[in-house]
Amino acid sequence: MYAVIKSGGRQHKVAPGDRIQVEKLAAEAGATLTFSEVLMIGGEGAAQVGSPTVAEAGVKATVMGHGRGKKVIAFKYKRRKGFHKKIGHRQEFTTLRIDKVWVGVEPADPAPAPEPAPAAAPEAAKTEEG
Image (spheres, rainbow, N blue to C red):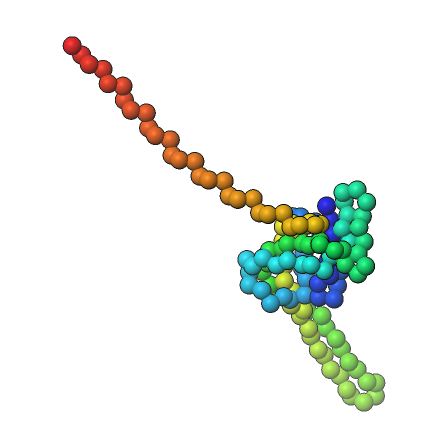
């Protein structure tokens, strides 16, 4: 199953397990985010296209970290005037790992399995000599 979500004014096609980079979000690394602006859901049967969003659809993602992109150089120049201006820019981004995509009621996280009790060491067989 995949979804098209809107984040930072852009659209991103995502599926569980994907890692994407979006405009910088105000969230700590390790935080869980839920995107409710799902524009389209597809992959299982017919695709559902929202108008503008798909009702009761969502995407859950985990923030992996923040970073800055490659430097982009902008150079301004006016001929015969001696005007030169060089400007650099590095766009900040947030890396997300997509955990779930759903339509309808959000599926509950499975409860962690209880840890098995440590196996008891077998007691040495006692034999009576007589």
